[in-house]
Length: 248
Image 1 (spheres, one colour):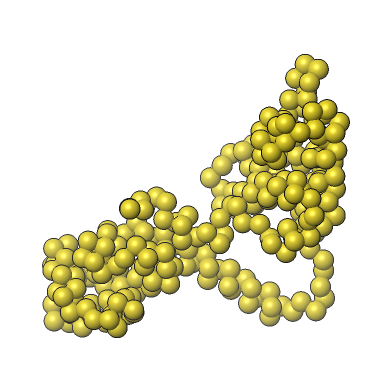
Image 2 (cartoon, helix red, strand yellow):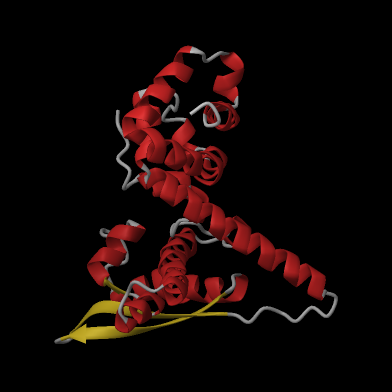
């Protein structure tokens, strides 16, 4: 089994991908249709928030995530109601009206919807999602805000390091020399540590001896590996190159 570099950021970053939903909010929902709709609406709104900040989508595309549209057929498939509630009035009440009311009452979303007709039939539903304002907490200190802001910047920096490490040719070399495993590729601490502390030193060695010089170094330290180095691979690689560079 081989995971391509293109998919690795998604495997590494499962906690923050677009399908994440707040379990505390889902636990407040009683209807299975409310839970299904909440997951789908949350997935779309998370993409709206992501691309609003990061860019990468046209303005109309970004807005479509906040106002997602779904056909009645797709909605019935999603909610497993293809053979149920044949009358649209029953379907609307059980699958739309009551669940949307429940979501609005018990989650951080305010949700409304409108029906889109094709001829005399209802063909699709357009949802409109907004986030409820966060309650003002006067006990929330500036120090707390600064701490949270710092944590966010730290996490963003680590994500950038992980992404760069996944693209780095040194990661591929380490895999080829069996110094990194596929399990290691899912560890953000290892990848960010390599990109920040080890790969710049490999650049120095590459300038001095070329890429083959890096390969020779990796082949040498691979043969010197022990159980400790395998458990602390980033530290082991950093210490090894730091000891080797002065000799070069």
